[in-house]
Image (cartoon, rainbow, N blue to C red; front, side, top):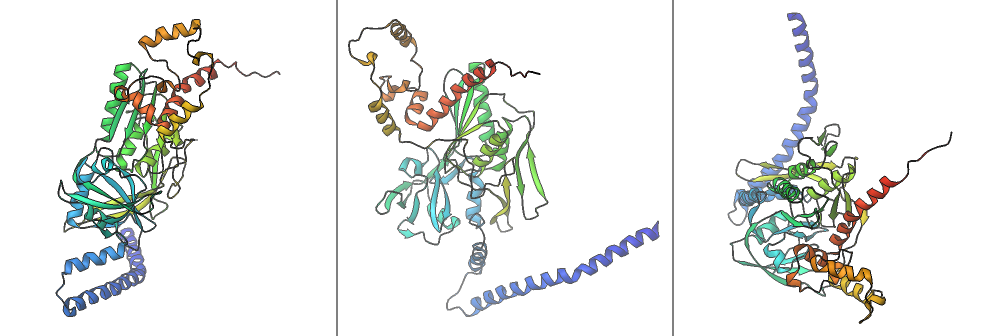
Length: 456
């Protein structure tokens, strides 16, 4: 037995010794490159015309190194990293926008609802060309974030270029403590519900589950759900997974593959959290990114939801955050994620099942009113029909429920219910709601079809 162990140890030792030239070769090459960096640092410290801060130089060197990688890989100095840690808890200081560097230009992915940036009129797709009068050309995400953060109540001036602008316009945004309420629920009556997810933070999954359970308790059931992910820039991956799990009995939610293509990590649904079987429509647009795309892809590929709207942003990479010894951090891209069917949506996005363009609500309403067909019932003083009389009686207790009901309510906008306001101002939500209501009709008609038979 001892001889056999000795034999295995000898084989292992030979294997290690045999691989040492390769390991040493890589180590030597890396050491020589680091020597160059150390030598430059030493020369600058000794002979530069003025005294220099060594830490500042090292941080600058790290920043330059990471600048050769993708834009989502960043070095976070201690002060920035501390703020970064607080962002995912749902409360942090700043303006309330998600930004990215696109084609070398600092660009707004989406403003977070009810934040200073949102209230100031900043929109997704806006290009930030100056911050407090300074050009943002060459800025990294970290630098931009640092410039925009500051004391609560102090203003920051953003030079914004937007499609349709002749030249950049300056927006003054007052810094504030950003408190995110990521789940916004609206009762659509008759058992239907609308939920807007503005971002994925630590409270998103439990808040969404709570809203749906309360809706089910109130209406005894959930007949259909709209999940609005438009302008949702993402957030915590685990929250996207947990929310997907609320609607899936089984199946893959998401897979990630890093440098080692064989080391595929797959997350699957569990049976213990499913909220029930009801129709779901997900709304996306070009500013729905990251965790939003994971949720949409998971429910789309598992045939659990219909995706409507526009193709999503296409951020299909996964970042890992490492806290370093001095309180700084490294946010690094470590993998690509794949939907259950194996799609990598990096730079491609999630394609909706039903494309619905975003339409200006006022223009749409005006067009409908002017293009409506005139019939006998539209003539003033016409002879009332029997059905019309009945409808008038019903209207006293409940508004007529049809596609354009909201155009003829005659109500002052301030008196509209949350549901009426939502459908009146948002064409895409209106289409999603119509689709949900027709879902049951199509399902009923499908079940009423006679069974197919063959003649032998």
